[in-house]
Image (tube, rainbow, N blue to C red; front, side, top):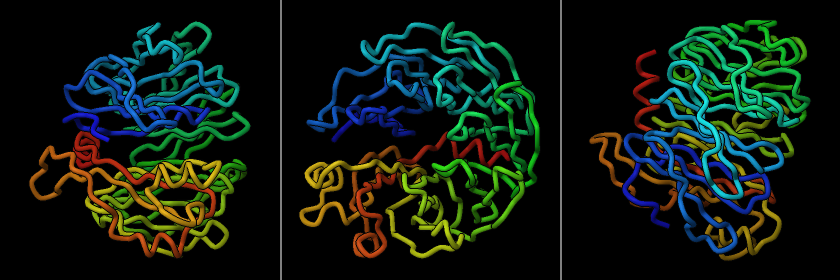
Length: 340
C-alpha cells in the first residue's frame, strides 16, 4: 500500500482494530488512515508538519497527536478525524500515553526535561512534571497508578495521583523505547548505545536484568500474553526475541534495512492474519516482518517495500495468534538520539 513519498514514522492501531494510523516526519502535513477490513486508504487527517505520533483514549473516541516541531498536541475526534483542540506543551514533545481510565495524557518534552499532563475532559495542561534529562518516551502501568519516563540515562517514575516523581532509576546511556508488561510488573527499556534492554521491577523500581540485544534497539513491543518481547535493532537490521520468563534472547529475526519500531496486533482469525502478514497457510502460527526500507548509507527517501529475509526464523520462533509489523525508518528520531 502506497501512502505517498513521505517519511512514515509511527504506526498506531485504534482500540477496535478497525483503523491503522501512520504519522509522518518532516514537512508532511497529514496522517494516513488505513481501513483494516479492506486494507485501503481512507481520507487523511490534516495536521501540522512533522506530527510524530498518536495515542488513543481507551474508548477509541479521541486521538492525541504529538507535533514535535510545533510543540503542540492535537486533540482529534476519531469519528470525524477533525482537530478539536491545539494544546501547547513543552519543547520537542515526543509520543504521549493515555491513562487506562482515559482521563489524562502524559507527554514527555525532550528539550524541556519535563512531562506535560493533559486533562482529556478539558484538553488543557493541568500540570508539568520535572523529570530527568532529555525525556523521549513514556509508558503507563495497567492499573494507571504509575507512569515511567525514559530519560537519557535514567527512568523517572511518576505517581499519577499526585503527578510527582516518586523514584529515579539509573539505566544505560541513551535510553529510548519503553514498554510495560500487560500485568504491570515489569518495565522493558531499550538502551540505545549499550545494545541492551533493561528490565525494571515496578514494585521495587529496581533493575532485575540487562538483556544484550542488537545494535541501536529502537522499538520494543510485548505480546499480549506477556511471554515475549520483540526488539527492533536499527543498526543490526534485525529483531531480537526475548523470553520474559528467563530474560534471555531466544531468537534473532532478520527484518530488512533499519527497522526502528514493532507493533504486535492480536489477530482474531486466520483470514485476518493472512491479510495482514501475507501468509498463505497456517496463518495464526506465523509472524512475518513487513518493513519500509530506507538506505543507511545514503539516507535516501525511498519508500520501496522489501520482504523480510527472516521468514523461516519467524516461523520457528513465533507467538500463535499475534501479527508482527516491523517498521519504519525515522530519520529525525535518529538525529535527535545522536545528539545525546
